[in-house]
Length: 475
Image (cartoon, rainbow, N blue to C red):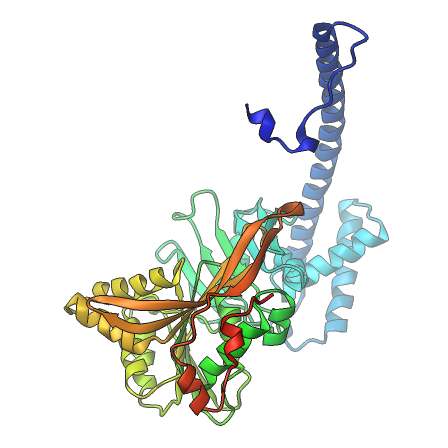
């Protein structure tokens, strides 16, 4: 029965009928098994040779790295000119290769010297991935497995660490640079790299098969609204609506799953904020790249070795209220800071923005309710919902689809309360029509036909959007 639903190119060609069908099938299986066995043996032999050579090169590199640490003056390493350091590394590596009796071609020697430079000045094997502009995420599952995300798709790389100690040394180099620690007593850490990339690590004993590392890279140049439109993330009509919403100081929540583009969207929306406004940003790990002139950035701090000195987002948010902000932007709301965020939105800090993990606009509201409940504050559900309905104006839902593309799948307005239920209306949505070649999602952005509840507010602020954007098909 399933054969009826196979794609045409998946259906095997019928066997030749020079002999009986049974004989043809048997001979075909024999030929396939023989060819497969031969190909597999050759491939395995080739892979084995490559693996042994790679292991040898890694051993040589680590031995040379140890020699470099013994030879170089580490106290002046940061002040040394790059050209001088590379020259010294080249000299030491040549001596080491000669003593080890290892012969490499010019390309391999050049790569070895670059790897040694990365070990001394950078993050070892990760540097080549950090330099690659096509890589969005780097995911390390122990010393033997390093995955990357390119274009929304995960793929295994040939990058590896010598062993767990090598990986732990790189992790320690990252976290010590930002004044944090990770060990058996505190086996996980959040940090950021020098270029602003987000870093997270989990080490044994909690990481069973070796340390786990995830790095979310951020582009040095943030994507503008026009670029996101060109990429197909949303349409010009949706951008015009969002510009009016942000400029007229509506409170906006960007909702979505992991890797869906929440921070990218928040960065892009911040471009609509006037340069004359004072913005205060609060994050666990500083990631936002606001381009305005008057921006105050704050970052939470974990506890020290003694378990003291922690400063969480709620502490920062309370302090931010005393800093005369026109807008408060919280990188991600995930805990009891939600209470202070909602109060800020309700008490004169209009135009504030944040992100939240949720699968839809309705789920985002439910998540806010749950976070209020988990904060330990005893409030009737109706009072909580009333607070949310008056604080939140627009919920922007972003999603990463199965083809790796990121789309703004919904823009929803919170219109108030109906009894004990928060009422909402969807203004724009992404309509999925099917799947095309290479599993690309086929669909279109379309308005729902409902006029914005804030249309009059937009008009009074000088953003008189044409009624056609709420009715005409977009995209």
